[in-house]
Structure formats: C-alpha cells, structure tokens
Length: 426
Image (cartoon, rainbow, N blue to C red; front, side, top):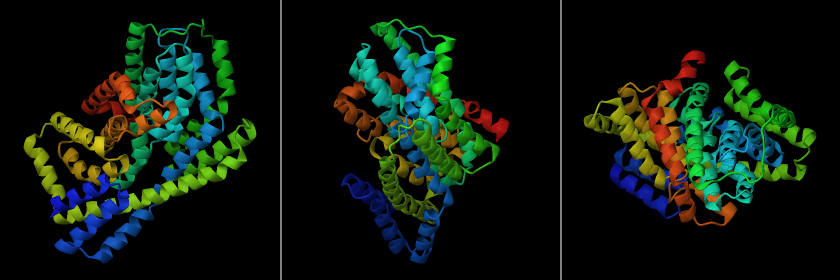
C-alpha cells in the first residue's frame, strides 16, 4: 500500500498538482486504508506543524535578501569582493564566488543569490571577455553557496523537521562554505588559465581601494555580523534574527543608501506571504506523511535496508549522496527535507553520523540538486536572466558541478570540517 501511495504522490507531482495536495492525498488514503492512526490526530499534527514559531524565519530571511538587492546592499558587497582581487587571471570569477558567499550570509536562498549576484556580475564578466555561458554557469553553481553559508533556508527547515538545533546548524555551515568556495575558485582559476580569461583593463589592488569599498559598504557588511552575532550570542532566536535582518535592511536601504523605493516594499511583502502559504501547505502534510510512516514502521524498514548493504559510515554517506542526487533531479528542495530527511536520519545516526553533520550532508546535496536538470532552479533563474538555453548553461556549469560534488564528498567523509565550530562554540 505504501508503494502505491508513493507512486500516486510522484504521479501527482509529475502532473503539476500542488505539492501539498500531492502529499496530502496519499496520506489520507494511507490512514483510511491502514487505520494506523485517526484523522483527528492527523489534523492536530497538521496544525502543530504549521504553528511552529521557527518556521517564520524562512520568509523573513528570504525577504531580507530581496531588501538587500533592491536597497543597494548586494552591489556594495560585490564592490568589496572586487577590491580584494587584482587583475589576475580569472579575477571576476573569483569575485563572483566571494560575492555569492557574502550575499548568502544574509539571504539563505540559492535562487535569490543567483538572481542578485548574476544581475551584477554576468554583464560585467561578458564585457571583460568571458564567455556568456561560462559566466552564467559559474553564477548558477556558486549561487548554491546561498544555502551553504549560514543562515540558510534548508538548514532552518531541516532543524525544524528533525528537532535539531538551528544555531548548531548555522555553526556547522561555515567550514563547508569555505571548502566549497575554495573548490569553485580553484576550478575557475584552472579554466580561466586555459582560456586566458583576464581583464583587458589593468587593475591593481590597494589597501586604499579596499578601505574605500569597505567604508562605502560598511552597513551591508554589518548586516550578517548583527544577524549571526545575535544568534550565536543568544541575543535573539533565528526567527527573531530574520525579523531583525528585514528591519535593518529597510533602514539601510531607505535612509542610509536611499536606493530602496518605498513603493517596492508592499509587493515584496505580498510575494513572501504567498511563499509562506505555499510553504506551510507543503510542510504540514509532508510532516504528517513522516508520522504515518513511523506508525507503520517503515522508518525501521528503510534503516535496515541501508544497514543491510553496509554498516561502514563512508559507504552509507555515498549511498545517501547517490539517493539524494537522484531525488534532487526530480523533487524540489522542501519535499526532500521534510519527507526524505526524517527517513534517512535514523540510518545516519545508526552508523555514528551526528544529526548536525547529517544536516550539512543534506544541504550540500541540495546545492547540487539546484543545478542538475530537469528540476534545476538555479539554471532556470540563470536562463531567465540571460535568455540562454538550459542545455548550454548546463554544459558550461559541468566543471563547477564536479567541483561541488567533490566538495560534498570531502565534507561528508571529514565530519570535523562541519563539526569544528559546533564543538568549539555550540
């Protein structure tokens, strides 16, 4: 019966039925047929999931990303990154990766990072002789840093779904962010060295230029410092941090940089209200599906299946990565976290993988999913900005996807990369 429910769910998703309905209908059928629990309990479970205060962090962090983009904060972060890099081979590619890391430290969203940084960097890279498809592919893959650098939308969702500390998840994200960023920069430099991508305009770095860019962007740089510093110090919760980031961004954009039009605010709020409604409609039934699976004992079945293949944690990590890679090609981020992560977490803990580290494994796998067709959100954003085909962008992005996959294997096999700051400060 569970197999029929899964087939029905994926069929409905394939037909374009809203995610919440695609999950809710199989849940109702399972409960009605198996009698594993009552519909009253399911209704109560749905309300409990939707009433979770921590869930409010998601739309606020995404809203903060929009405010940064419209308020002039994101372009100042790019200017700071640009002032750090001289006229070396592949300089603009390096700036792009660093800028994505800066922007990801506030937005928590991969598509938002691609849109914000791509709007600035792709035209600039093309003007300085970079191939347009190369520039777009790099931005699309580097945009995945938006969910790896804390604070992160998937990290919040994973923490809420699996009752894992969101503060610990944020601490665990810093090490992998550096690994992924360094790998993408290295890949960029190797390709640019071969193709000769170098700015035709001589440019030298200087402390004066860096200080000038840093002073101009001081309010933008201060934003992630306030947010993450407040979370780690215990001054406010992740949800409150999302609100603080929005208020801070509005003040800076409206009154300090004066680049945010007050008429843009209401449409941004309306957009995020629609997002939150859709998110809740997806999250609540997915949680109920996990509860039904637990009642039917299928979490134990899944765990026994993986452990029957191997009890070696490295083999289990590879199996999980492969499973998530296939799932990420066809299923969006939120369903993977709320449906699949509770099923795989018992497998991970059974072989000694810390739940926080497993959350990082999930997050890195999702960063790859954002650029692997057919469901490749970052590629769609890049295509909509440049008018290029998904196929052409995918081919240009392939070396960076390989670097991203290599990074996730390194992090998966070396828990110390993600657990270092958790053990020190968590």
